[in-house]
Image 1 (cartoon, helix red, strand yellow):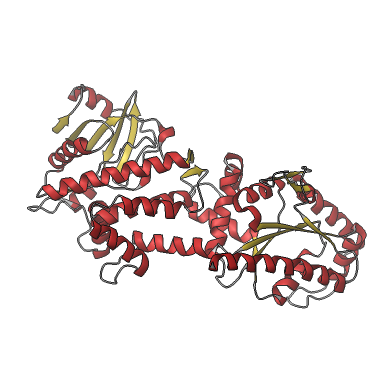
Image 2 (cartoon, one colour):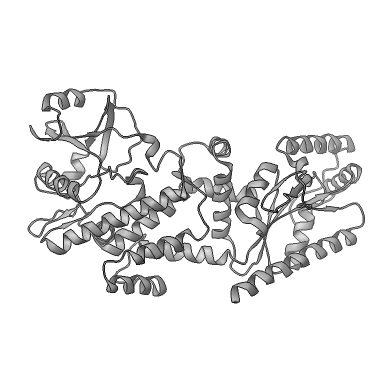
Length: 497
């Protein structure tokens, strides 16, 4: 048995913990760990020895000990208590951390906390770069933001990020050029480490690993300025600017390159500047679908996206182990603002660059609409289409008893008025349980900083009563959408300035 013991623990005490069989999943993320658990204030993990032996032929424990000794002097890391190798494998012991401080498990943090953490990590990267410039070997670390606590403590040290000239210590798949490039770039190159930090912040939010509150829309721009400001030389600053403008050359590129991910996110953010959102709601069979089809067929500036088609894409991004329905319930109850922020970001991602107005249907929840205004401000609108109950029933009755003009639906001659009445009532009840009947009552607050139900300001919801002829309905829609096109052109004019 070989071991390195730090702090005040004895080898016997660590072996006792190592034999503790109840390996509790404590949420510590690491790709090299095959079992983990904790006892009292000690966290332990059994490392993937098979993987280590495939990637490194030397004495792993000696390398880890050397790395821990150096990195512990350079930056703030979690306290390692010991590392032991026996016939079962390699066991690493460290101080148990407070899981509420992890950027994981859906924990929420204020933007200022995230900004301070990024600044700390940039400072740590520079400390590593200074070490590398004065030593024959190179030291580095995995700068993924979720490998740190919000307090700036790096807690994932395996495998050791140390490059030696006399032995291959890179822990890369030697037959995979992309993997080797990616690993070395993100762990040792100054620009690679810093932009990996930014990319993992973006991905952590997209995967909903953690929630950032009060984050400004231009947070990527803010952090890029921080990264440029932290550059250790004028050459690095110039390279960053060139990479962001021109992209990475084919020779230097690899799958998931941090610079290219950031460039794509910047493009998504930029195309959102001239977008106007129109959410459509209304009573059942009031003419919403017909009205939307009329608008998208007659106005090339409009893109129609169904709300129900967006959330499954958001769900896929989060990599959640829950079912879709379970995930939706959990996220709505945990943080409704974040739930809709993920939705908005996905709409920007999938929207057409050439479309200035995005129409989304069907909106039910009044609380969701309030959060959308908090996120989008005056770029979000609510169109509520209503009609008298009797007319809604008659229209649906006639529609279902005739063949569909644009689809494959055939007339149902067995359906009765009573069937339609019952269905319409039940649909309205289902919608109203989610607050759909409160949507027409939304008004601006007096200071116009928020919207609320029956507030003291102007009406927020635009209500169109589809209670006359089809031509009159279309005229009302024309008048509405023309005002929004004028508003959209105003955004574009401001951008050009």
